[in-house]
Image 1 (cartoon, rainbow, N blue to C red):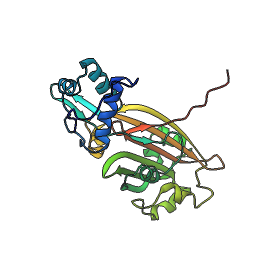
Image 2: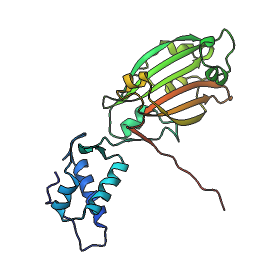
Image 3: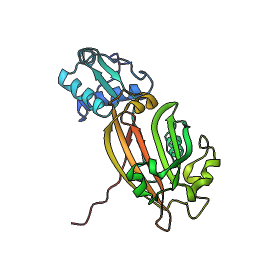
Image 4: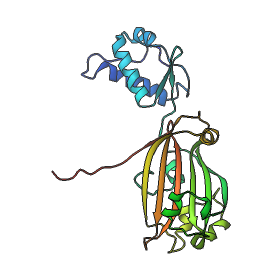
Length: 254
C-alpha cells in the first residue's frame, strides 16, 4: 500500500514522476491493491512523498492512459483491470493458446451451433462466402472468457456443403481451426481481417457484462483455404475495456 515508506530517489537522473509511476505500478502488480480499489488522493500522495501536485498528476495520468487506473468524477482514482494483449490482429493463434500464454484460464460457452439458410443472412456474409439461393451455412456462436471474465463473442458462418461435419463436434472443448485443419478443403490457409470501433449493443451488454454503448472492437474475418475458396466468415466483438491489440509494422525503404 502507498504509505510514504517506499523510496523516491532524488539523487538519480530519473524523473520523479516516472519513479512514482513505477512505484504505484509495482504496488498494483504486487497485489497491494485489488481491481476497483480506491488509491490515495493526489494530495495524499503528494504529502506522502513530498512531491508536487504536478508530478503526482503526471504519474497518475499516465497510469490512467495505460489502463492501470481509472477516475470517477467526485469519487477518486481506482485500480483498473489491465487489458489483455491480443495477437489476433496479426496472427492466427487460437484464443485458448493466447490466453494460456498470458497465464490466464480460457473457457468457451457455445451459444449456438446450427444450420441457417443463406437467404436469411446479411448480403455481406452471402457475398463473402459466395453463397447461392438455397444454400445453407453452419452457424457457430461462442462466448469466450479469461479467468471467467467474458472477453469476446464470435459468430462464425461456414458453408454447409463443406463443413456439415462441424455439427458433430463439441466446441466448448474443441478448437474450430484444429477441426477444420483435418480436411485439406477446409484448412484455413489465409485470413483477411478488418477492425472498427463500435458501441456495444444490448446483446453485447448482456453477454459481455458491460454497459450498453461501451466501446467494442469489432473484427470481421474471412478465411480461405489453399485453393482460395472462402471457408469461414467470423464476426468477433471484443470488450474495449479488456483488450488491446498488437501489430508489427515494417517500414518501407525510403
